[in-house]
Image (cartoon, rainbow, N blue to C red):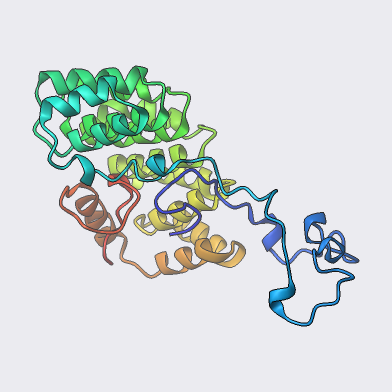
Length: 296
């Protein structure tokens, strides 16, 4: 995959306008002042060996996450926790405990208390990750509560919650949510737009061509990559022309994906894509259920 770290961790898509071989706007020196050699800690210092170089790290930051947050997606610590304990953690625990509880409950049998706790967390928890994980868990469950919660979450302030809501809506009833999927094509965040495109392709097949063509010049490399991938499943001259344009004019993984898509059988692609996307036991490397690629 391309610009998402470890499965959509929050980093944005790359803008390749500066990757297309354009001349350096500042050819006489580094564009970034932080890279100016005169700022080197070793400038004007006589160095005889590497160990003589001393660099202050006082102004270096590596993020604000504490160790608990970095391991919040690891449910091993609560593998032996009782069902009632997980529900209690989801309602009353610290942030990391709530995250783990939401993920762990997705792997358990649901009862009314768990569904109610997940629904409340998805709608009202102060932590976006807890909301996202709760939406994910309910999406796995399905049903009316999951459907209602996912519809609400599609308007969440956090883009990753919105993106997860589209996964849940796709899983519960994508046909009933066609209008929401179409509206999400204009979302400001690339993950939401991408998930909307994937779901619309699963819903409409070749009928998704207009939306894919519109997104072929999306600002996000991640979206354009998926546009190229999905256009391979459409047997239409306009799709072929768009793929040829992407293969010729785009860069990196987008161009490569477009070139590969030109060589696939469109009908076989569509069948395998939908089958692999909807097979819950599929073990294909993927960001989420929507984004599993068929093995072509």
